[in-house]
Every structure is written in structure tokens, then in C-alpha cells.
Amino acid sequence: MKLEIKEVTKTFKAKTAVNNFSMVVETGQCVGLIGPNGAGKSTLIKIIADILNAEKGEVLLDGKKIKTMKKEIGYLPQYPDFFHWMTATETLFFMGQLSGITKQELVKEVPAILTKVGLINEQHEKVQTFSGGMKQRLGIAQTLLHKPSFIVMDEPVSALDPIGRREVLNLIQEIKHETTILLSTHILGDAEEICERFVIMKQGKKIEDTTLDKLTNNHQAVVHLELASHNMLWVQIIEKLPYVKNVEVLGKKAKITLDNIQQNKDRLIRDAMDNNMDIVKFEVGSSETLEEIFLKMVVSV
Amino acid sequence: MTPLYILTKKEYVQMFREFKILWLPLVFMFLGATQPVVTYYLPSILAALGGNQGITIDPAIMQQDGEQVMAATLGSQFDQLGIMVIVIAIMSIIQSDKANGMLDFILTRPVKVGSYIGGKLFSNFSFVALSVTFGYFVSYVYVNFLFSNIPFFTLILALGFYLAWVLFMISFTSMISTIFNGQGVIALISIVCLLLLKIISGLHPIIDLVNPAGMSQQAMMVLITGSIDSQLYGNMVITFIWITLTVTISHYWISRKKYHKN
Image (cartoon, rainbow over all chains, first blue to last red; front, side, top):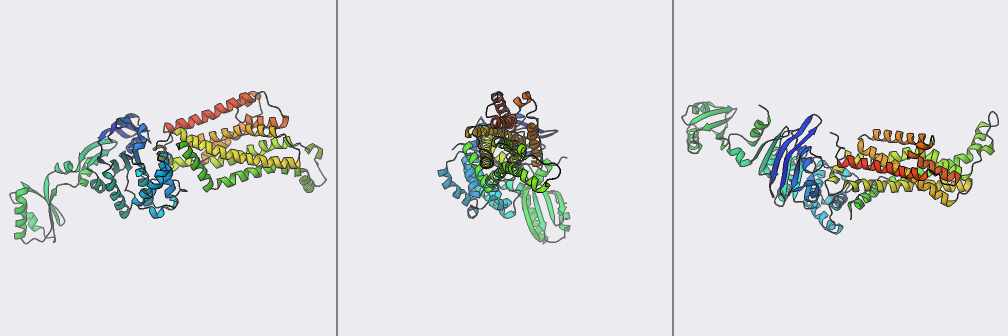
């Protein structure tokens, strides 16, 4: 389902958390909302999930106000918490019934979804005994239970250990094909892995809306070179070569900018071979990683 | 199944799991027994402890009939310790959902704020009302045994009036629980306000008319005099207006999302 966010503004006392934010998420897209801590990601997500009211602007799902479309939304908060005295199964029955699913359906669906998130062995244990990762997975089960066509997730993996992170990322990969997803994160690697499109937020404003390809293509291609020894003399020599534009040395690594990289990268490697350089890594790629681009955009200059 | 039904059921299950279903009726049964027992044995206790010297209480003055003792159960037990117990039992009904984020969670589902508040009030009122009724009947049994019998109709009528006051206590405490975030603050404000209402009842007829605690006064009057006070209907209507007002404020507070801390 198509999600439209129109000029949303939200202020907390003196601080503007979300400032005139607009974007459109098309059906089937997976959008990563990235930004540093305090950029207003959680606030925006809460406005989309209709937990907070925006002062100005509106959020439309399929052209209708979000308030009337709650059945179509799955929401995962940053730290999902449930009634401690309920078991995993009871929690899903409770949330499922509130979403309007019948008991007969839940009897079938709940064990299936608990298997999917890997909690089937803990189905009759109380939420009280669950770790953060287990609560997160129960949260995801709850999000998927009523088969929403649009899912919002607030930092779904930030609080998890590497194993939990991997499990949750795989789960999201799986459901990605069936629904539209909007997730926030400050871990770029995660966003890079699951989303095609990124919206970068800073101080409540949208500062970039782009895809990974576009982001990296905008930047010049360079050669990343890593040598085994500290002998960087050769590197200093090649700086004088006519087709080398610039060399940046950082320890055993060098970032080399070339004229017409397609032709000249072979000449460069041949030159290195002739000089018996012990090459550990020779890579042609973007001059900047996503992280560097992100940092450049977000850290005020 | 409507959300109202599911939310109400969840409240009952929670009362079971937290043993509230056990201790609240027990407390009220204890409170109910206290008044007749203490009143009955007070002369003998005083005699045993005080001997014959100094001031003695004429046993004839202490002779009360069942109706008066029953009214005292409402006025001196339920309206004092009882209020505190009720407030403590229900002070976190909405506050705890706010604190652990369940209120947010529930409201992201297609659930109306009215169903949420309705489920809370219905389940908690029915349960507290049952506990109070248990205590009331325990008191009645003792009164019947130690003092005199009370006409059953009067008994039920007085209980009905008293429960209107109980409903106000619950809707008021829920409202405070919706607006404030600290359990201590909620308990303090609720107990102080409700006790204050109780204290000012009986001072002046006009105050009594607009005071929800006046319903407790009405219940006691029915027991003692056996007849209904002329102000009863007015008082009842105004009490229900107060209840509606507190529920409306809670509804407004949640649906306008004012309950978020920041």
C-alpha cells in the first residue's frame, strides 16, 4: 500500500522533532529511515503508527487517513514490551483478537508464526522471562500476525546481539516480498542489506532521499590498494605517473584516484607487479562508503 | 468478539494472576466484620482493661441497633480504610499501561479509546463492587447475629447507593491514573481528594447535593431512618454527571494523546 507523508511537523516544547517532513513510499518498497540519534526518526514513526499526533500535516495510507487503516498497519516499537504475566501464546491471542482475527484462525496462525520467529519452544513461557531479543521476535510475530500490508519498524535490530540481529534481518528479508516496509535504524549496514531506498534525516528534516546505487554512483571511482609491508615508497613514486591524479596514504592503505579508471587500472597493477609489490587488496570502487557519505551529510560542516 | 469484551476479559485474567481476586474481597470482609464485632465487645474490652475506676461507659448508651452498626460499617470502615484500599488496588490501572508502552501498542490496533476505558472501568468496577458486597454481607451477618436484624430491602437499597459512590471512586482514580505518571502521586491525589469529599459530606445540604460522597451519606440515612432522603435523586443524578465527567476527561486525555511524557 502506498504511504504518503505530507508536510508533517511535530514539536515537543521548544524542540522541533519533525520539521515539515514529506515523503511517499510506494507499494512493495522497503525504505530505510536513517539518521543519527535524536534526528526524529522514532517520533516520525510514532506519528505514522498513530501513536503521536502531528501538529501539522497528515499521513495517508492508500489515500485514507491512517486512523481508519489500523488493520493494515503492523507496528514494531523500539523496545517492544508486553504484559509480563502473559505467555507468548496468550500475548499473540490478545493482540490478534484486538486486530479482529477470530479465535479459530488464531489457533492455526499463532503456532505457525511462533515457529517462524523461533519462539515455538517458549510458547507457554511468560514474557517476564524473555530476553530483549526474544521480546523483539515476539514483537515481530505480533507485527506480522494480522498480515498487514504496511509495516513500520522502529530500530528493529539496534538492541540485539549479532545472532539476534542476523535472525531478525533474515526474517525481514523474508517478509519484504509480501509487504511495504518502513524501518528506521542508525546502523547503516543493516539498512544497506535490506532496503533499496534510503531517506536520511537530520534534525527533523529530510536531507536525502535516494537509492544505494545512486548514492555510490554520484561519487568518483577510485582504487583502494592495500600492501603487505609498510614500504610505501612505490606509492610515492606512482604519484608522479601521468595518469595518477591523487594518492592518499593511510598506513598500509592507499586511495588512488586515476584518470580514466577503466583503462589505467590495469597499467597501475602491472606497474605494481613490475616493482614486486606484495598486494593484499586491489579494489576498484566508490571513493566513499555509505558510512562516509552518511557522516558527511549528517555531521554539520 | 468486540475489543471491549477482549479487554475486559484480559483485566479479569490479570486480577487472577496477580491474586487481586483473593486479597481485595478478603480485606473488605475483614473491614465488614470489624465494625459490628468491635462495637459489640467494646464495653467488655473497656471493662476488662479499665476496671471500675475513673470514667465508665454506661452499657445502655452503647446499646446500638443493627441499622446503626451497619451504617457505621459504611461510614467508618469502608469510607476510610476502604477508600485507601480501593485506590491502592486500582491506582495503576492505566498508569502501568502507559509506563510499559502497552497503551500505545493496544491503540495501534483497531481499538477505540472508549473500548479501552470501558473495559478497564467495567472490569474493575464489577470486581470492586463484588468485593464491597462481600464485605457488606459479612458485616450484615455479624450485625444480625450480635445486634438486630435489618430489613433486607433497606439493606440492598443502601448497598446500591453506596456502589454509586464506589463507581465514582473508580472513575476518579482512573482519571488521575491517566493524567499522572507516578504511582505515589496518583495514590496521594486520589486518596486525599476522596477522603476530603467524604469529610465535607454531611456539613451542609447544598454541598451534599453536589458531592458524590453524598451517596454514601444517603446509604447511611436509608439504613438508619429506613426512608429515602428527599435529596437522593438530585444527588444521584449529579454523582452520575461527575462520573461521566471523569470518564470524558480520561477519554479526551488518551485520544488526544496527552499521556506521553514528552
